[in-house]
Image 1 (cartoon, one colour):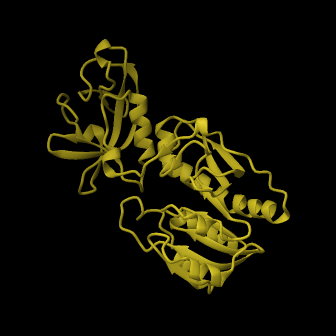
Image 2 (cartoon, rainbow, N blue to C red; image 1 turned 180 degrees about the vertical axis):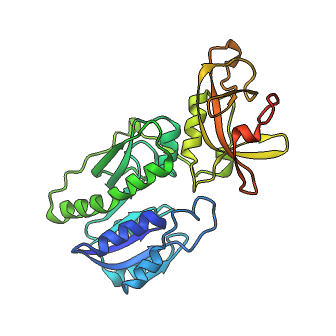
Image 3 (tube, rainbow, N blue to C red; image 1 turned 45 degrees about the vertical axis):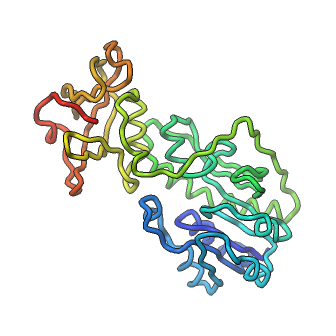
Length: 310
């Protein structure tokens, strides 16, 4: 088939790479200009550069404006989209004979929208994955062509999940196109009662709330693993990025955020809104990073106990 590809960052790059290596002909690429947003500077393999290397025409847009002329000139049988960051109007996504196949890195209908792997890890989901679905008027809500899932391990970080799900993109794109081209695709409607939609991550979303239970804070730390902006807290006038943390063996009571005691490889911080009961696990901070990027063992940073993190 003749394919127009809409996408951005490494997700779009992997999609385009799979298409270029397939039997299909890529006739147009639409991507966003380079961004300096914290979450768009990472996983930033260039879709535009890959297209240019293969002689594919490229259109740069922040929004889907004035696209019908290049689309009509390219005359695609289908659009394949992955990590296109704005809503596409129906005149665009319904233009090709086979419509638009969108690839999203969650198990839809859950975690539509942005940063699904991070949100899923924070929420302690047992598995994550990739969905190939037909685009319709509602964002990430169209009929499902294929889904592939992977389990979330107890110590997995968002970075681990990124690398494992990114490897699913090429096969799911090619397999979905084979089904569509052959007329064998069996579309499955999404159960909208199970749908959830998440907003873009911002730096403030990485701030640690010490009223959360320790296991939830530990997941936030794993969800904000390098190269993502790390989970952070404040110690006096210093911002501390928490690079590594775990749930304590013992139970610790008191006020959430209290720098309490050494345990194992780190320092326990009291956590949980009901920490006063004394039945809560604490968060063991093991490694911290300062704003000058100095990284320290928590036991080297917290030389004395007492005080609070906020």
